Image (cartoon, rainbow, N blue to C red; front, side):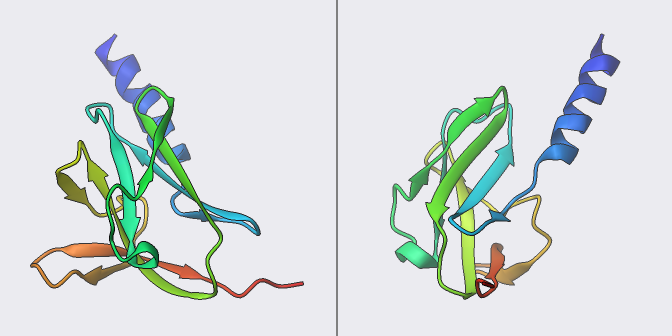
Length: 113
């Protein structure tokens, strides 16, 4: 049974894409079965808490959305349970946060018409 659960979570983990940028919004997703709350903060809101509060859309998968930002680069992090800052594990782009760790880096392309 434990092996079946591992396989199911690996499938769920591989299905998570973050950030997902579309014409109207940017969706952030995090796979974390231990989190009680998840928030997203970033350069677009001057890192202000509470940021964007994520909803648990399926067990262990959290999602938060913001309106699409202007083209550019934006740093962000997840905040787990109001205290643990976490770089987006699904986004390989990162930048130093100035505190000995990393922020995730999101590149928003210009909208094409």
